[in-house]
Image 1 (cartoon, rainbow, N blue to C red):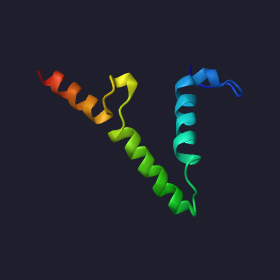
Image 2 (image 1 turned 180 degrees about the vertical axis):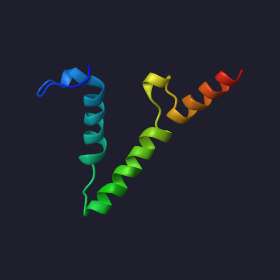
Image 3 (image 1 turned 120 degrees about the horizontal axis):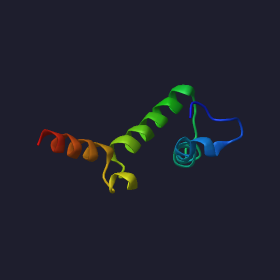
Image 4 (image 1 turned 120 degrees about the vertical axis):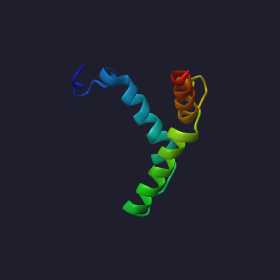
Length: 76
């Protein structure tokens, strides 16, 4: 699918799921005092989400653990 139709969030459920998670865990949980403050807080959340938070789709491993395991498996 090359695009999502307006008003049809089910066209891209993965992105809609991520957007909801970002909204619930970051945007609704913080009070932003400036654009720089928003960028800083969102970057902190992004790093936590991508580097230290376990994901069910990765067998409850962090993305870094998953990538390391995949690299070790590919090297064998």
